[in-house]
Length: 334
Image 1 (tube, rainbow, N blue to C red):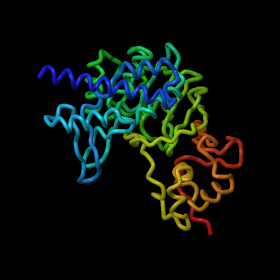
Image 2 (cartoon, rainbow, N blue to C red):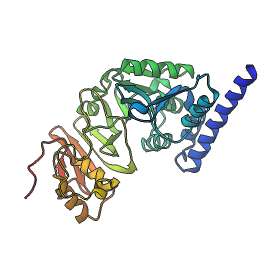
Image 3 (spheres, helix red, strand yellow):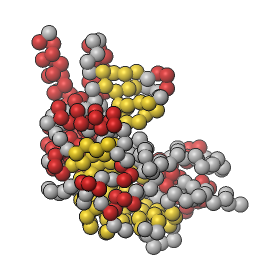
Image 4 (cartoon, rainbow, N blue to C red):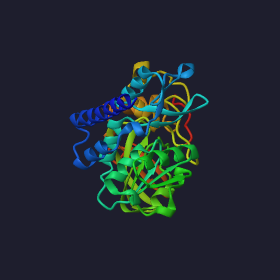
């Protein structure tokens, strides 16, 4: 038995090292500090089980399964560069472990510096918080989640590696005023709007990195009333934020997509614009804008947050293409 356990331990360590090499080769771990963090924090300790399939076909793969083949499938899944469903409720996904390469891109884009105080919205498994703890130290990391089961599990996973950041059960849209001010806010759930409370909990010059539509918005906070920034080129798909701020529906949720070719609805760049302008532009108007501006990529878009409201824009916040986030839809044109 001891020999078998040792062999499995070797397999886990080998799979972990292979993943770090793959992420490095893919160019997402160029920063030595983040490369060291991924090398120090094994993903399998944060994903003791996950679910595969959809609907009635869900299958739970578990690291302690008595069947060695199923344990091997679990290990292969954990160290695959893919998101993993870690918590379901009534068949709905409520928490997941993000794709490691996307996590690495987001951590790099967060642009942390030594001494930065970081708030993470969406504790998930605790894996992301562990990476932040390795880079910054426990005392500078706070992670918040609405679900007590999720925070308890994340806290337990973190403690196994000796990490003890502040793991807070609460509505992420309200931030964590007791641990403010923050230099960085990293969001791991999709938003429809930037919760205004976050700006007041940031130091001037702070950076907020958050999934919005199907992209990642990087905002610079000027003060408690103003933040602005552009989207990164990276696509991002996350579980919606739960709590005081509701998440948007899928493309077309606000009405039929009259006259929009199916292949365009499925086009990733157009889908991004369709969700970003949902409830504001009719889908045909969004299509005209997209075609007229040369099928713009995500990084041409940005967001401005003020006390008067929040706006998305194309190319220039003072330019001709500006629209509010989260407004009622106008009647269809024509």
